Length: 336
Length: 152
Image 1 (cartoon, rainbow over the protein chains, first blue to last red):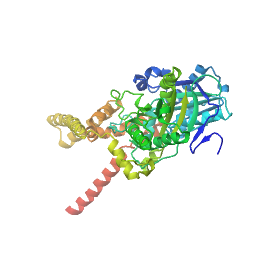
Image 2: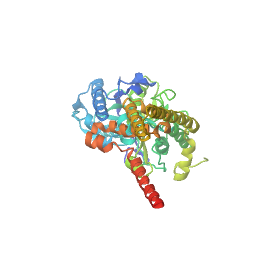
Image 3: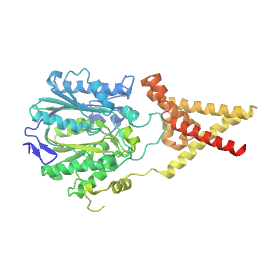
Image 4: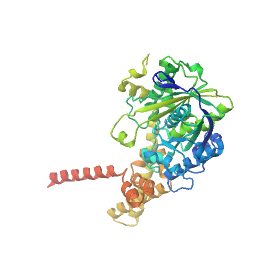
């Protein structure tokens, strides 16, 4: 087995890369939520002066990229790779937003798990000696996602109680071989798990088994127990998915009830903001980590974090054809 | 659920389990809201109908005018970003009346305007209402044929 591997799904990074900077931009609804003050910029409206939602999402990507360069004092030529993705077909929000980035780009798609997928690849590239600075970035936009995956915004329909609200925003993380910041020490890459859920309005239910599978594999591969962590933070399981994930991991002998939180339940005020089962979208884990969690780690309130971004790998065609929803979750250990 | 391994769930067992864990729609409250709002929309239609009838118009003209005005109002409220909020509250109460039909055509037209007037507005306008038209018209033709055969 390759020297850095632990078990089937996990690698241990020998020279843990540091997260030396983050940047985040969020929409108005996210700004009104409990984490509103943790984002670098909160937009006043969903279009941000653009003509289409797609263009607006690209602008958010472009500005987040500029902001992380600015905050870290890096020039585009200092960045060896941008690893990024979003939810729109062929990831156009990302690629159009990074058209003028002039840095090597790798596009990734893991639905809402993309943040941890890009962090995993970025951290391994840096630890492997292939890069000094990697920017990992993901975005999502409520309006462009609704348009692609569901119904027109002005259609007078009711959302299911299990439905989740796609986060409007973008988060970027700079992973580096040098500098100060929390370190990425382990990477657990998820397997595709499909337990037969067909309801696209219940993504939390579809993704929970994937999250549970990755978390349990992580504990088994590394020998860690839940006690090792201050926080096990899933991406966007929402109310339904989080409860199921908690129970499923518990049944495998790892009690994470006290450690488990979900970004999808943190970014909005569920009692006031009418988002039903919580938040979702690539930007959910990206903005929560880049904003709130990164600050908590810098200030020492969270020392050991297992970040587990979760993704439902469906599209509208597969839903219409009655397919079940394959899901995935990727985990990274981040230690301050 | 006992000591079940994640992998041991059959699809059916897992679906039942998720179903149990998921919050349910508030059927009674939703039904009452739908009844009230749907009823009020119909009352509005009836008032328009009565108004034109009182002006001495013929029954067919009155029906046509009432439909046209209700469709216009549905489209207008959609354009003013009001109908979606009404729909969020009333559910089927605002979907079923003819104003809901107008909403289902205007909302995709607005949404896909960014893709142009041909492939956007033109092609996507009936993306929600299309199936209703196809099967509604088909059903009326079939019923018409049966009616014709029974009566002549």
